[in-house]
Amino acid sequence: MVKELPGMVLKAIGVVKSEIRQPSMRDSKDVVSDIVVDANLTEALDNLDEFSHIIVLYWMHQVTATKQPPTKVRPRGNRALPLMGVFATRSPSRPNPIGKATVRLLKRQGNILKVKGLDAINGSPVIDLKPYIPGYDSVAGAKVPPWVSKR
Amino acid sequence: MVKELPGMVLKAIGVVKSEIRQPSMRDSKDVVSDIVVDANLTEALDNLDEFSHIIVLYWMHQVTATKQPPTKVRPRGNRALPLMGVFATRSPSRPNPIGKATVRLLKRQGNILKVKGLDAINGSPVIDLKPYIPGYDSVAGAKVPPWVSKR
Image (cartoon, each protein chain N blue to C red):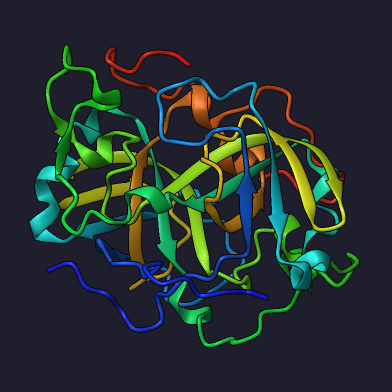
């Protein structure tokens, strides 16, 4: 049974300001967005701009209405593809609608981060920021199936 | 102000079975663990084993007791380093104690995934699984500061 454990409640640490206004399949790699972090957490951003890239975890708030997300989906809604297990896809319709994006950090100014390549829509609550560290976050020679189109 | 939004409550989709019993700085890259996924979500794992590597998001349940996590920490507890903003580090003491690991998927058997390189301790609730897709998750030539030791 899928359980809600006591204490697994997320705090919004900030919010995304983006020109992306609704979920879409558009390529967001050139989209520039702001992440406005809670002013009380400004100090927690210190040193982050020593990294060229950061990992953004955010809440896909427009899909949280789904009480019972599907276990099978078609990747990117592509009807040419068979149904796949949702955990084998990046579909937002998942048990916990958490998005993960690796983005370029263009600038930090106080509690505001300007980033490039974030696919989160405007208003998405941000739940964590981590530095992108190749030794942890990158794998050489990883294998993906043919149905995954290159970005 | 850090807000708890209605609806940002996480469900455990599974649990980590690991020989790692308590938080430590040990290198986990050769640790083999099982992720036991909720049996109701078994189908949602279909096709995941077409990928060599997966991203595991998990709840660092042993640090959730901290009501007010520090905004500044020393990376890896290293006293030779100055205090850094917590979002510039991978410290578990963060506003939302979510861990992110990229691991090798060795085998899927029903609702159980055998993985290599997971740094989560035994009993950690798993909150999401995503396929590792180099085009989304990897960056060529990312810059990190000198104080980040290579893994």
